[in-house]
Image 1 (tube, helix red, strand yellow):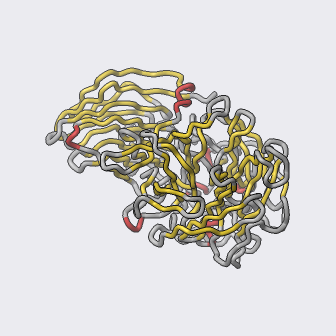
Image 2 (cartoon, one colour; image 1 turned 135 degrees about the vertical axis):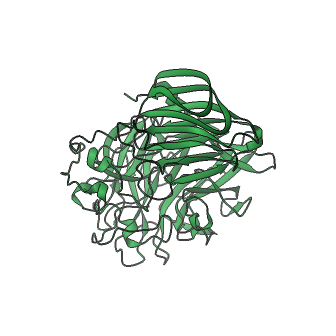
Image 3 (spheres, helix red, strand yellow; image 1 turned 30 degrees about the vertical axis):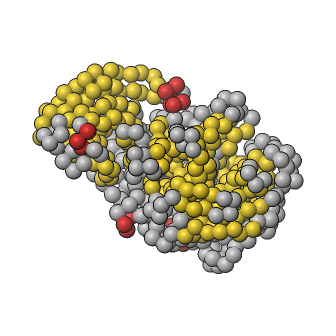
Length: 534
């Protein structure tokens, strides 16, 4: 999915996850007319623009952020020479109001701390224009003819925004993925006749000795195969008409905790008209090399907040490169196409683009025999902990201010309540000194759900509160809450449910409080952890 359509800068409104309008695809054309973007900033390609006087920095302390200008879609990381190569859509001309994305590269050994490597696939290098989303693979068997170990990227480009011209172009790298060359001015996978035809996700099908690609085609995910990454054959389609325009598809095999093997088909989708998220929808099932057969009609969702879009997953690798068949990593662009430009980082720091925490995914079997993905923060994050404040068990009946302040941290605790008595309990985070602004994260026991409510502070727009079910009768729940300068992420219980939100408290909003209503609650083994990526 691109954010740099070649068009005029007229119009900047959109509905997240719905049929992709022209202006939605062009989120990179300008900073638009939002209040948060009112300050004019000079262009910077290699460094962030100067900060607005007195505003302070909003750049995340322990989340990935673009160095300058704009980023949106992550591209699935690949493993090359002992490290992950992470490409993402980047517009170096965003602050000057010009459109078009390139692929910028960052490298990492753990998908927590990154090193910027600059642009790897340039925009406007061939007549087809700028480059959109796609995927890169390591061609170990030299199937494409560029040499064993060459990095091959299949990338969407759209030469003419007014016609059905979205198509897949092949780019190749012979320097270990640092720079790419266009194979041809013509696509290797031409448009079959539909307006939406993008975001190829390519993987090697070891069982059948060929490549497979999943393509976003409006309300359908198309599945294609190839022997050489150059010539592709359509095999089947997976169609949903009730989840908006499907984008950024994903397809992978994973071994469940009980030892059984399963396939996952996924896409960024929009279920908001049905009261569902607009994030990463996935189906468990089986893939026979041509057709995906889901276990159930309804999708499950990897995140229930409003700001987890264009998510990617990749192999979990050990330091020696060994693949873990029972786990994957995942992360997403922390934004929403309803309000992509509404961020104080634009004015304060000269950039717009933050990613979620990297998660480790496992496939778990529920008591009813169904399977679901469970998320936990990537364990490598623990290496960057700089301090832990242990508060023990804290009992609250009403509210209690903590003698701790901060704008970037994690809170871990087991929440314990009395079923039938306690109504509501949780945390007030990024609370203003006067108490007016805050973000609430907790459990509404009376309603049987966990929640994040960002409505009490400055937000980009969109939904103020999100919910996921909780067993109120259980009387307890483990939570991990990650707070950074513009984001809040809640990991609930066993990780089946996660909420990712943007929120923009002022830098001085650094207080923390606990609350309980209807009766006392205990915040057991309460810990506050700080991180620094150095």
